[in-house]
Image (cartoon, rainbow, N blue to C red; front, side, top):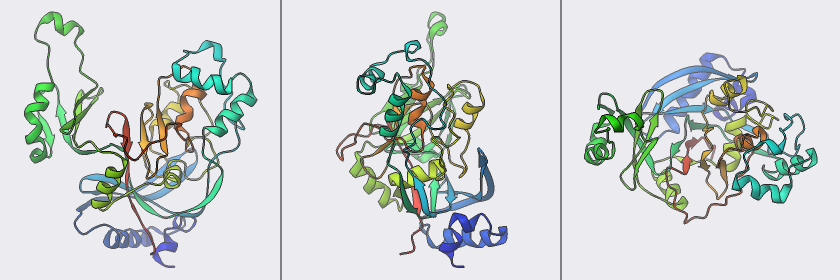
Length: 346
């Protein structure tokens, strides 16, 4: 069995750990640029809704990547409409956002047949494709950014790449303003994000009250593609994105066919957790995720309170109706991207 046969998922899941260790060693030796620093290689087991994968995580220049086995006969796309999917709530009981109103004009969304058509036309077509094995970034980044560290809003301390932080420190600290009076402190809240174009982008973690801080350079799709390739990575194709999200399982969502509301329930926990490949996906519906083409995944939309409508953009096979042009500006507040190293035999 050669390296590429071993990395086929049907073979990979049956390999002894000793063989898998040999395989990951070859992958890191021959497919990761020698200019990259690889560290913290870990053997992990991931599971989501009964689908398990034992694989490796590692850091490449400080960013976490996961080895995703390939599948030469992956079934992607969706043409089953509402089959097996939780029945939607009554449309009359929701918040009628402009986006919802626009789609309801086309699809009505009153009967199950309406929903069948809507779901099928909101997802990619059913197809069989060959997916190569890949090292995939565990969590997508805002477009045009490089993660440099965390800024603690309580202590005012920065932990991370100090050399990258120093040129933007003064501007960032000026943007991060504390209340100056007791009256201000009563209503003052930390900004969920701070953005200075072509300088930095910061996202607040409400749980820790720390900002994740990124250096930022505005780009379009063509420039993002070139930058990613120059950094010896790939952007995922639409096929590859759908596969790493749902593993080719015949379920509308990576966690199953439940479309429950985003509340503290079992489905919500599954949405948040790592999937069967150990990857994390944004569920905020505040950004699109970019692929190598003009096809966007996820969605930027205001929630309506109708679970199936709100959660459909989280489907493994969802296609945004927004078509990206090569020249569109990819602001980090609107778009995410995910790097990969595709393990090709040629």
